[in-house]
Amino acid sequence: MSPWQEQRPSGANALISARDLRKSYGRTEALRGASVDLHQGEILAVTGTSGSGKSSLLHCLAGIVRPDEGAVTYADERLDRLPEKRLSELRRSDFGVVFQFGQLIPELSALDNVALPLLLAGKRRREANEKAGEWLERFGVRGQSDVRPGEMSGGQGQRVALARALVTEPKAVFADEPTGALDSLSGEQVMTALAHTARESGTAVLLITHDAQVAAYADREVALRDGVVHLDPAGTVGQEAVRHEG
Image (tube, rainbow, N blue to C red; front, side, top):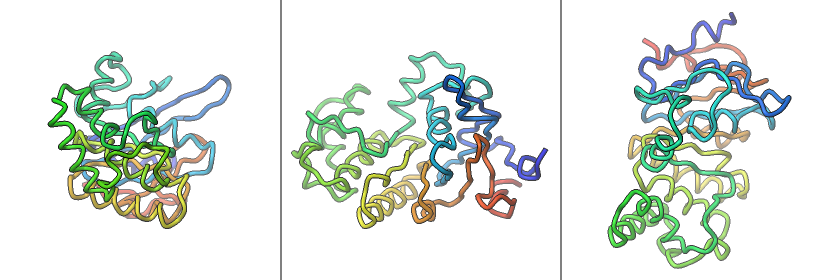
């Protein structure tokens, strides 16, 4: 057993804990025993080269896909064993997801995109629109309320996507390369807004990125190499790796 495995957090106090995850797509092994903890209120950056399994790890922790082996625990529930109906409920209420290209619904305005998760959760249209407007305001895009995604800049669209992910006030947000399609200035604005809002609301964020400047917004950083999580991105274990222990 390597030193970083011996010193990894136990997971007892983690909001979401993954242990020994394995996931293959055909003959390609994306995860080869990955373990990681996401704690309440922290921003955790997962870095690694393209093809290292970062997105597969996020999908397993968010309950989007099931690992072939291993365990994913959220609160007292094993995500890898839950029926799809329960996973869908969690993704509507407790989890928010932001992808590289936002994946907003092109036929809907910014306001309608952000209000949609609330409507799916059973909120009345007026209440959903009011709350959606408040979140657009938080991310500085209230002026885009009636604009459709195709008429926005990349940075505006991604901030709308962040508002949609956070409008239900989830416990955790999973952000997969949220600045990957943006220029440096837009990326900085998006990350500043995400970090500020997450810390203000106490939301945990799992941030997938290959960009060191984006990872710098995180409280903690781990690296994924060959489908395995290393607690110190440099390959050695330091104080940052064990900050949540004890």
